[in-house]
Amino acid sequence: MSLRVISSATRAASRRALAPTGIRDIAVTRPSNFHRLLFPCVRAPVQYRSVSTEAALDDRKCSTELRQSGLPTPTAMPMRITAAELRALMDDPALDAGKDYLVVDVRRTDMDEAPSNIVHPSAVNLPAQTFHQTLPVIYALLHRIPRVIFHCGSSKERGPKCAGWYQGFLDLKGCETSKAYVLVGGIKAWREGGYSSITIH
Image (cartoon, rainbow, N blue to C red; front, top):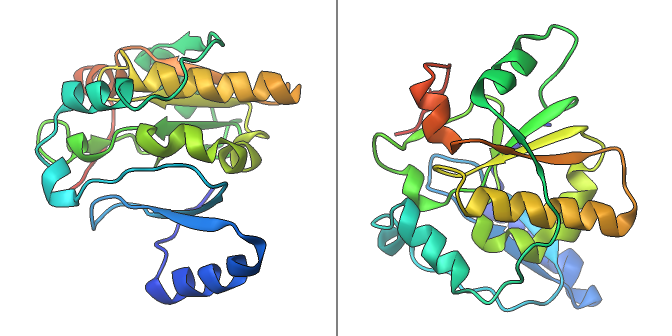
């Protein structure tokens, strides 16, 4: 799966196309040097903070914000995968990232400063704060990928929640072509294992 930055012209064209349907578009905005995805989604109350305000939030504060958002508690139990097991998937020449497995980083602005400003080389960014609202589109994008591996900073709250929401939606659809996993220890465990990563500035 390849991601591209959505230009303002493309976003405007999307709004015009969606206008007759009554569906609004949500730009899930990352820091200026990271991915941005455009998600058409059903009407849902979504609150955003300015990037300058969110830059000061750490892993714990982002998790607290998610707990207080009023979103439902997941009921599905995703599987777990360690950093070493994920590394083994990456080393398997028969497997391709984006086709056989995909890493989903659900952090938001707590990835902005060292030592958290690293991303997994096979990851896409789908922030937890807007994950549940855009599940139908996320399902359409990911449901053919056998292993979808979620993580946040330490995979104690946001990563498991998003994995549970995704697995629950798979179960609701009766989909057996994809499974949700949680990366044990999150990006911190990946970094501490000395595995390859990308630093964002």
